[in-house]
Each structure stands twice: as C-alpha cells, then as structure tokens.
Image (cartoon, rainbow, N blue to C red; front, side):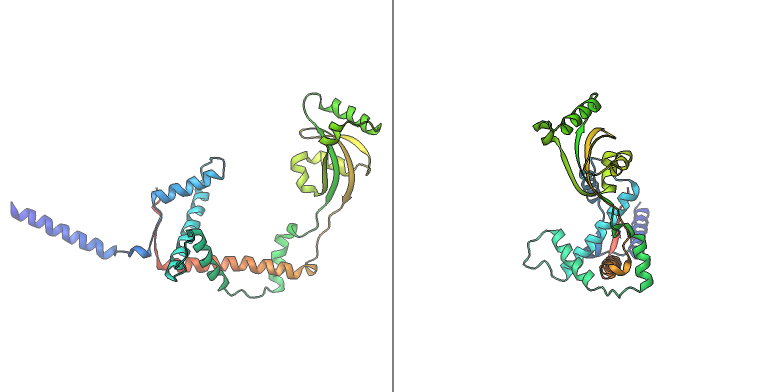
Length: 262
C-alpha cells in the first residue's frame, strides 16, 4: 500500500517541478494583472459616463490597454521614488511619470511633406467656417406656426410683448455646422438667404421661428503657410504623444501582464 502512495507523491513532485520550470515565478512588483475587480471597475467607470451602457468588445479592449499603460507608468513612478513624501492619488503620480516619459521623447521637426499630409487630413479644424448672427423667437406645439406669424405681425408693428422680448434668443457669429444639428439644414439654408435686418417666419426641425438675420460671413480655406508654426506645434504634440505611448509600452516589457480575460 505504501509503495503506490510513494510513487504518486514522486509523480506529483515531478509535475510541480516541470510546471515551475515552464512557468517561472513572477515577482509581485513585476506582475500586472487585470483582476476581476479591476475589470469591473473599468466597466463601472465606462457606464457612469455613458448612461449605463456596457462597453463593446473593442471599447473594452482599449479601456484595458489604457489601464495597463497607466499601471506601467505608476509602477515606474514608484520605482523612481516619485511618491516619496507625496500623498497624491495614483492618477497624480501617473501624470507625473507620464510627463517625465513624454518630455524625454525626442521629436524632430516635421518635413514639409509630413506637415502638408497631416494638415490636409485635419483641414476642417483650421479653415475659417461660415458664421451666422441672428435672433430667433422659437415656437413649438400644434399652434406653433400661427403663434409665430402672429408674433411677426406684432414685431413689424412695433408692438411685440415683453414676453416675446424675453423669449428671443441671440446667436452671434455661430459656425453654420454647429446650427444645422439643432435647427436642421433647410432652416439654415433659408436663414442665410434672407435679407439682413428683416424679420421672417421660418420653420425649423422642431417648430417655427420668428427670425432676423443680422450678419453672414462666408467661410474660406486657410493656407498652410499662414499658420505653419501653429500646425507644426500641433504635429509635434501628436507625435510626442504617439512616441510617449510607445515608450510606455516598451517599459511594460519588464512586466508580466495577465489580462485574465473572462
């Protein structure tokens, strides 16, 4: 009876030794593990800012990647003693270490070709947009059109009520694209075609409006040469961010990362 038990114990020891050989122990300070608690905190944080919606698979993977990058940065900050005498929270320490990493990245000046290619993809951010200045008195509900036309008559006769004056909304130099989601494209197209300074009734996507166009400025493209220094700075900031993330990932090679995917 004793011999089979002894053989079993020897076999178990051999299996344990083999497992240890292929799966060496990882020092705690070099182990980054996405535990169930961490996963839940990531999901909870996402839901709190997205009206309770669960993150999709791609969104979740990106959130975990960000958490791992932050944890790598945090560990490196601790290794450099940035927490000594400092009671700041983890995010603050991560931020301090990230500044060290990103500021240590060398970013060369972009070539003209690089700058032009980058600028063309983001031209909408730099072109001067169409802007519209106008006043609107909005009306909604089943009688909105009739109320709007009655109010227009009062305004034209110089007899508008105090209530009408208080309801009037003033829009100054608003980019056209920012108005279209709220009022609808047909409303904006009609508005910009109106004679300036004249009150009219115009239908929007949510009701009727008594409006007066005060000013319209056509947009125009911005030449790269006019803002080359500004664009170069933005290019370098983005490049520094890309290289900084890559440098953080390189630091992560010193860690064993267990995602513990469900």
